[in-house]
Length: 306
Image (tube, rainbow, N blue to C red; front, top):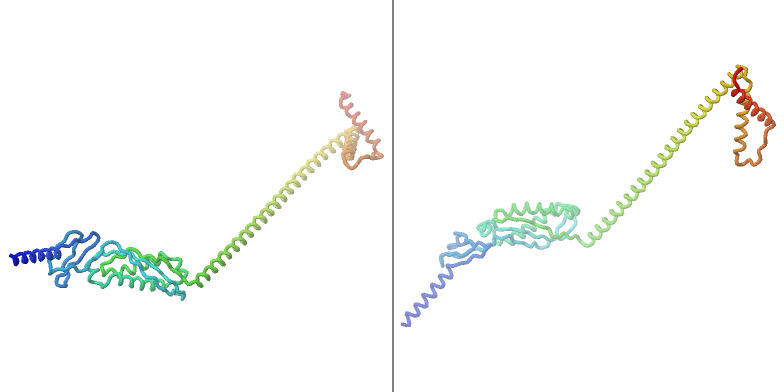
C-alpha cells in the first residue's frame, strides 16, 4: 500500500512537470522561438501554446513592439577637426523574430555599435557649422544607413534622433563671440543702409522742391510776360486810337492821354508807404489843365455833332 502511494505521488509529480514543461503563455507583444534538439522549429504567438516536453524548448524571446535604444554618448571629430560629443536615441522594431534570433548575436549590443559607427561616419564627413545646423539631414542619413544594415537581422529602424551635439567649452565661447560679431556687423550694415536711404530721400525731396520752385518761377515769368505783352498791346491800341483822333482833328484826345499818364504817376507816388510828403512836379498845372481837357472831351462827346 505504501509503495502504491509513492508511485501515485511520483506519477502526479511527473504529470505536473510534463504539464509545466508543455504549457507556455506568451505575452502580447512578444514572439518566442521553439527549438528541438537545438534546432529552430516554430514560433509561438501571444497566448496559450503547447510544446513537446523534454524534446522542445523555448529558444529566443523576441519583443515585436517598437523599442527604444539609448545610444551611449561618444566623441566625434568633424571634417574641420572640431571635436564634439554626441548623444542619440534609436527606435526600432523586430519584424522577423526568426532572423532577429538567429542572424545576429546580442541584437541590442549589435545595433548600438552599428548606430555609433554610423554617427561617427556621418558627422565626421561634415563641418561643424553644417553639423549644428542640419540636424534633420543627419537623422535622415543615419536612418537610411542603419535601416539598410539591420534589414538582414529582421529589424526595421523607424527613427534615429541626435538628441545633442555638444562642442567643447572654448569652441562654444568662440562661436558665441563670432555670432556676436556677426550680429554687430549686420546691425552696422543695416544702420548704414538706413542712413543712405534717408540721405537719398532727403536729396530727392530737395531736388523735387527745386524743380517745383523753378517750374513755379518759369510759370510766373511766363504769366508776367504775357501780362506785359497784353498791357503793351492795350497801350499800343490806345496810342493808335489817340493818334487817329488827333489825325481826325480832335486835340482833346492827346490831353486825355497825357492826363491819364499824370494821374497814374500821381497815384503811384501817393501809394508809396515811405512817402509822407508828396512833391508835386512843376508840370502839375499841366495835369490840371489836362483834367480840364478831359472834362471838355467828355462834354464834347455828350453834345450832339454839328
